[in-house]
Length: 166
Length: 169
Image (cartoon, rainbow over all chains, first blue to last red; front, top):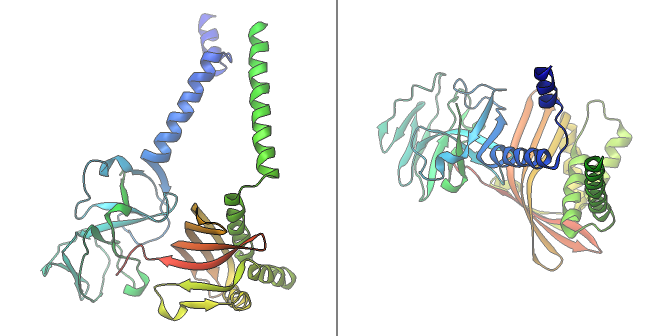
């Protein structure tokens, strides 16, 4: 009898002022956590395949770059005007480094980079270019398309807002 | 009994506050809301559903032109598109672009509105265009835009568009 009462109380709690305060607090904390620290997102597009598939679900973990700077080969979320639409890309070079593509091979500072995450064939050619100060060069893992159709390049570090949680 | 009365009173007070805020929003629209409404209009009139009839198409395209100032500037990383356009030219381009799609959805996100001067508004936002071309190809493009509005005859009109380059090759 007591158990029944407890179960009923759990699923249909009395609307006491204390309960309302507690519920409001949970809603507020969830809003702050999922709105600013761990933002849920759905992947749309094929530019990060096969690492991240079209239609996949993930969270953007913003805490990662609160106290540290983005590093090379990390997959990051690049924001547009806000957090509602983001690009998922991989950092391949940091400021002052030179980036280049020769027959689909990535060269940073003249050295060929081993990229095990790139699984599809690529034949890109891109003349050498320097990454500007406070910028990072980001590219998707799927380069099996004409270079003109792939959205990549250097972006301000300030636009890199987090990493996917998994 | 006292508790129920107490809760009912709190709920009534909350309802009155919500109704008040809603009524204020409806009857006294702020300038920011008026600017944002122009984006909602643009989104509605650019968007297209499969099998759209000619009457709807003409109505939407005509309305698109009313959102722009006499000379509207466009600045994009694609050089040939950069320039000044009249509302008639914009309506013409919109007709051409829409005819290439079976379905289009234009949605604006993260609108950040500022008023640097009187009768002038600057908006930074993300625009996302999704749709299906008549060739069957699926399009999904997002861009950051910087727009300038001018208040002309009590109406906020688009007077400048700039496509912000988030990634530079």
